[in-house]
Image 1 (cartoon, rainbow, N blue to C red):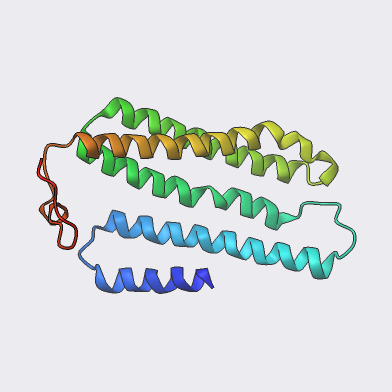
Image 2 (image 1 turned 180 degrees about the vertical axis):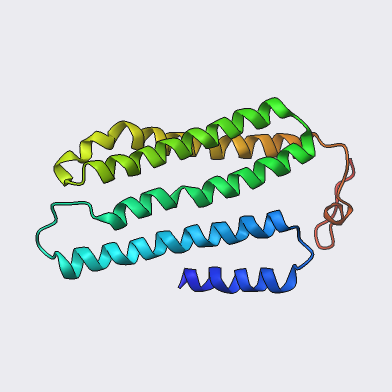
Length: 176
């Protein structure tokens, strides 16, 4: 059901925002394609584990590898978009580089986990991915926190005001 919302919003975006740049349109298209690949892998996993191989789950089949490999690409693209917007606001290249390195670390450790699942497909060998999975999830959380802190700090220190947010129609405004 959520995928139907993604498809509807993607259609709405491409139909109504034709003036956006080709790079942004490409980013949206790649993100939706990665989400589609992850969804197909999830459906295939459910089918394989509940219909084809019911009762004897001893291997991690190709959908698990596909899901893990594709599940990190969409967040990396979205995080990169946010970091570019942060750089446009702040022009702080050191913070931007640090966050991009964190995004890269997250992407590399996720793809390493997928490679481990592909090489050692037996569930008895799943422990081999322990370090890469912990690094992947930890760096993913750290990247999200870094982006949030950088954006909040930048928006808090900006000198410009947004006039639409300074009016208080129903709540009495406090003078500064």
